[in-house]
Length: 563
Image 1 (tube, rainbow, N blue to C red):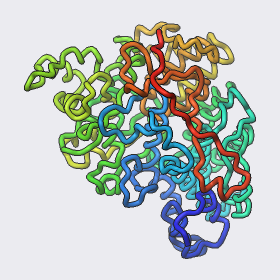
Image 2 (image 1 turned 90 degrees about the horizontal axis):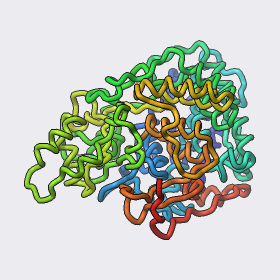
Image 3 (image 1 turned 180 degrees about the vertical axis):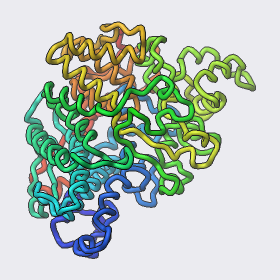
Image 4 (image 1 turned 120 degrees about the vertical axis):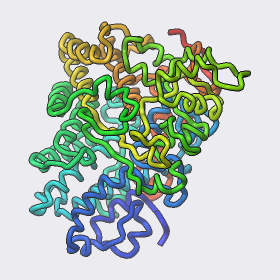
């Protein structure tokens, strides 16, 4: 049998008898028969554990090919964020620049297009297997003792579909509520149905996702998890809040965002800027996360270079890593950085662009005043300098220290990269609550927003961050919310989602920009490369699939935008 003929067909095979062929066509790692899985002691629990254990740390797409971006769910944070303007994949060797500027390779016949489709429908298949094993087919009551496992599967399946619905939708929901999104494959879908499987409209997708979340909420009502690496009912509330926000159901978005916050608190300044635990360890604000383990293939193989730490962490003291040593850091957009007031402590997550003036290209050593200035950001100032100047031939302005090495392990190969990554934080829920409240009663929303913002910047005054895009699709209030989301959630995978949700354009070309020359594109609406293409195999085997147009790269830099 051939390796893979259709990821959606493979995802539908949970409704048939498993055979020895499943290993050849399954994009994940199932090798047992259906009956073996049902009969083996502890097998169901292993399937449930697999739902979260393969979210990070595994070479799912490339196997032993060791693609640098093949490290799981957090890879899509960067895939999405570099498509816009807030993250710039600079340097001489950045593996995410395809999604930033090489849009030709996002067409249906390229590997980069296969990558998200393979991972997402592989994860969906894993959820469908668990639901099948729990006899929870078509929302039936699961087998006694398997309710929580089925609830986790429903919650995660909803999360995955909500992601891909937003990425593949022809148009934003705010523009066209009947725009096509993605086909649906569940634990009850047959091979025959997959071959004639049309894309859901936005409304159909919302109905499906919310039904999964309603079921998950019921099944996880009394479930007590051991850690934040498995979703519980608070995460279900958070997923509902995200979904209702997208749907512009403001009352329900506010309701569930508020419910999701119960038991969590905002990160303090000390937690946010910690040089030991900054965004590498769960704390009281983290609702859901993944973690890389020292036994993960992404850590122990390929020198650990195919990992989140390799592409996001700058302080390691060994000669590995794309961000630190190979010339591929990811930095903040200069304009976004410069809109952050000095009284907002989040500004300290990125190196000040003004320090570029202290670089002396003719000096044999790093100037002492520059080392001292970089010491305000890191215990390893010389490593920041080397990452940006020596290795990336970029500079230092905008280098990120938001995400840190594992506490006390910056010099330990490769344990420095055994870190956790947040998938949901209470701060996101607070901003959803504020936006949803404000879209019903602006005064109430402004009050919630101001209370939030003053915890980051005691001098915050509402109204100071209107984006000046000339885009009337959103109000001053939503622009203020958006600005807070861009700063607070930088690098956490929300940039493209928000651009599409708010029907924004992007601005990379402006005076003083740090975007890469030749890739300084400005658009007045959602750029077409943010509408992902389907891989060729799906169009070949699904006769009802209406495909998206190929992405188009602008012909050159745009005229500089004047803020």
